[in-house]
Each structure stands twice: as structure tokens, then as C-alpha cells.
Length: 141
Length: 141
Image (cartoon, each protein chain N blue to C red):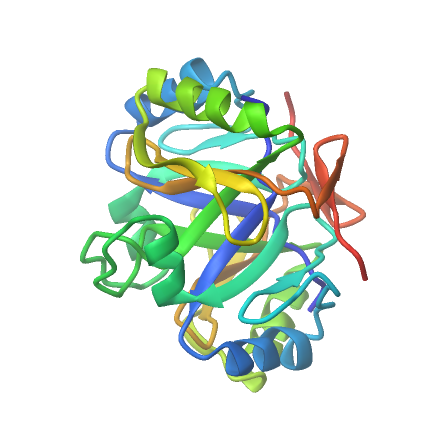
């Protein structure tokens, strides 16, 4: 199995509201491949981000959904410490919720968290140990 | 906020077991940036996959964790219909659990789901409407 993650799909309660958050609030480019109750965004980092009604997503995966956190977080890395606060502020203005104010991290960086309009947690992190090139993390072998 | 997803982190119960699943079972390349209770894999698709104890992950994001599905699924797209069954079979041999046997999908492709050793759901999909180039989905603007 090749090491690939092509799409991450976030279950949403109200698709229009979630689209407004990502497309209009954060300014992310929605792809023309979006259709019906499925929206998909092209990201600079390769893996696409999709939105789909949470109930249908659970059904599709044959899973029971009791709501809440599923043990998955998403991270958006930035190049400077200052960007962490400005990105968190953008997300909150777009309708997101601040989960954790940015603070010094024990691993030597600076990070905070916001939740999107459906509660999915995003970390916004400046990690001085990780280099970014054209938005992509450069990880050692 | 730039359209980027740098890392997706999956909360795990037993880090060694999860590493064995992804590194040894699926054959994915673990990065030298892995340290302590944090493991990170370099994927062909840009976004990195990280593993971290689920309890610590919830604490880090300032979230309460009641277990279960969190409304997030991951998708691994393949180029041929036949690969769907073979990838599902690889994942099950590696210790994953079949959530949904591959079947014709209403959107015109063929797909099934497995759960990793911590229950995180992966869809394995052949979608004739989506082209893959060097493992990456080519989505229209």
C-alpha cells in the first residue's frame, strides 16, 4: 500500500455553513469537482479536503456516530511565530471557535487551536524544527 | 489563511502497535523526525501522517474525548478497480479491520473501508472521475 492520503473528509452538519467557513471565511479554493452534498477543496499540500454531511459519512463508512471528538487533529504550519496569532484570528473571524490560545509549546515552538464550524480541531503551529518549502513540510528520512 | 494541511495526527492507544501497523504492515516510511511518543510518516501526497497517544492529543487540543468516531474519514485512491481489493486485503493482513467490503459506489466507482488498529476509518477508492498523477489527485479548478 503506497504511502498516500488523497482526501480527508470532514463530516459536517450544515454543508452551506461549512462551505462559507472554508471558502469565504478562510478563502480556500473549492474545486469544480464539488457536486450535490459533496464539496472538495484543492490544497497546496496535495491531500484534498472534502466536506460531506456527517450522518452520510458515518453511514458510508459503516460506522456508528455518537458525536464528539474522534481522536483526529489537523495541523496548519506557518513560517513565523507571528503568523500563528494572525491565522487563529482569521479563523475566529470566519466563524471558528478558539479552542486554545496560542502559547509556547514544550517542543520549542508556538501553537494554538481553533475548531471549525463543526468542531473539527485545527492546530496552527510554528515549529522552528520543521522547515516549510512552498507550504510543504520538509521532513527528514 | 493559505489552503494547506501539513499534518494529520491520529490519536492512538498503543503507539508501538500503531507504528507496527503503518510502518511494518503497510510499509510506510517513518521519518527521523519521530521522537518519544510522536511518530511521523512522509507520504507521497504532501500532508504528513502523525501518530500520538490519543489522550495526550485530546489534552493538547483542549478537548474532551469520549471515544468513538469523530466524523473524519481518510481516503486512499487507487488507479485500478482491482487495487481496491488488494489494498483492503493488505490492510487486514497488517492488523486492520474490514469495515465495509468493497462494492460499486453510487458515484460510479468502487470502494471499501478498513479501520486501522485504533479504529480510524480509511476508504480505499477507485474513482474513474478522478485522475491520479504520481499518486496525487488532479482536481479541476
